[in-house]
Image (cartoon, rainbow, N blue to C red; front, side, top):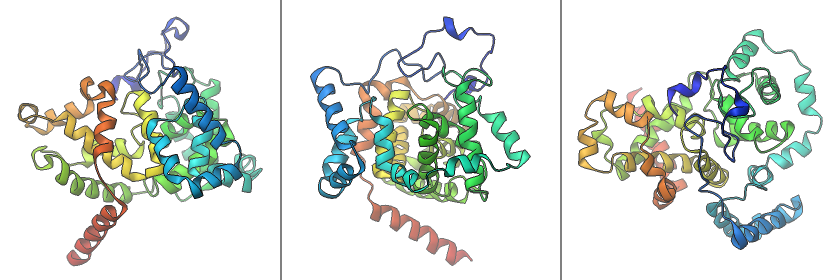
Length: 338
């Protein structure tokens, strides 16, 4: 996402601004059309299928046990926007976790929060998506509810407290579900799908950076980038691309996050590199670290046309065994050094 998204001019009258179907009123994630929407009979049929699957927890568990491959197939096609929030809750397991912890969210909100943590949260909630209608107004309803999610989580997991990259994730979830539902989904994302990403020292991110570079060498010209992966991939991974891609694509990536875990983040990251530097001319024009970083901060629009990026990502094969092998290789390397 471009840097100007973090410094929105508060004098802009949001009521006079164009709002896209996702609620964005400007910035790099404003979309003139929707690439993730399937209309007509096909769209209605997909919607009915998802409504049936997520009708209740019992039927969902049957689907996951006996027709898991079909669920994966439907996630790959894109979850209909009308059921996306509930689908994410079922896919992540947060729906069931929330049922087991009824009343816990309110208890967390009633507890005292460290003043420095609250200062950091209040400073960041307006920066998450400054061009989105839910979060553009200082002290508005969206910012207040996002504050509650982040405040509750800082109490729920005091060893982490709060990290700046959490705000966009909480905001994204809040766009699709109620505050309490979003909180429990947020807990699941932070502790299952992006586990360790927000811990002090960012050791998990550094590990994933090494894994990403190893995987990248198998699929793209990694040795010619002249840049350390951590210089550009940190926000990609910590926000699961929520601050980087066109919004329709962000949603498709998150549909897949809940079935592929971190593998989809690796795939999209590799696909982004491959398509951004898909010719010798583009590599040569980005010979310096500054040029490479600038190109990765302002991704070329053509890689998003006709879902090219997502198609490229889905064509990349990364298995759980691949990740285990890379994690083990890194661990063995560090053991040898020590």
